[in-house]
Picture 1 (cartoon, rainbow, N blue to C red):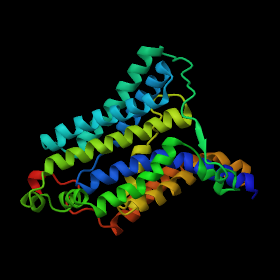
Picture 2: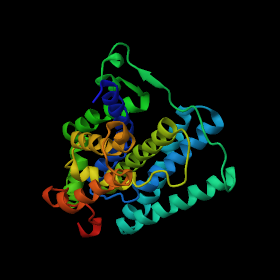
Picture 3: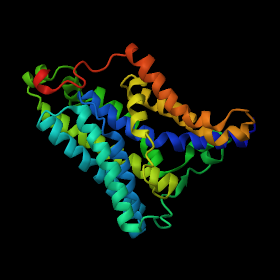
Length: 306
């Protein structure tokens, strides 16, 4: 395998992994607070749509990112109102949000650009190669990313530190393990879960922004393509650890990248098999690996039943 091919494979792997990493880190935070955000897919898709529309009309990718994060946070706030505030079923509400996002983005896209759509393309985020490091063979791909890509990787140690080395992180994990005990210690359980959901929504919106403005530089209906659900599996496979989420995101990113490089690798594998590889990995994780890990004790449990 040539150096150029390895470099290209690593570059594509990172590009595919970044939105999964952002969404996975957001889901990790909220699951540590005891909430399963099934609506992650809808938040990611809404973020992609808002980011692309804002960038298309303003030609400012950073503003698109802000709008994408805001769209994700808006859906997360709605999720929090129903689930945290009113005690709604997390799975049902999350599924409803996903359907809402798919329908709303599709209708809005057609209302703005017509049934067939327009040439919805933008320049998007530019690459920021690190001098010298980006010229290294193979690993140089790590240092030739847009700023949002660097930010995604920088969030891993930051979130790890926040969860395990700060008082706020201890409180959040207490809520995920035993909300009644946390409340007895003076922790504002509902506030903590709502804040975690908003953070998750913003990160999911950032993931969608990266997908639309940094990677595809366009918007297609349903372009999230199940990445929100894959991110849910990534959190399980990563054992609810930021570093585990990073490693698993890279694994799933490579599985997706192989779709584009299998012909260059000279492997006689039908491309249809490679197209379904990330989703097969997701099913394997959920079916076989989930039972071997320990989730937060109160994960998915309504506050009234905790």
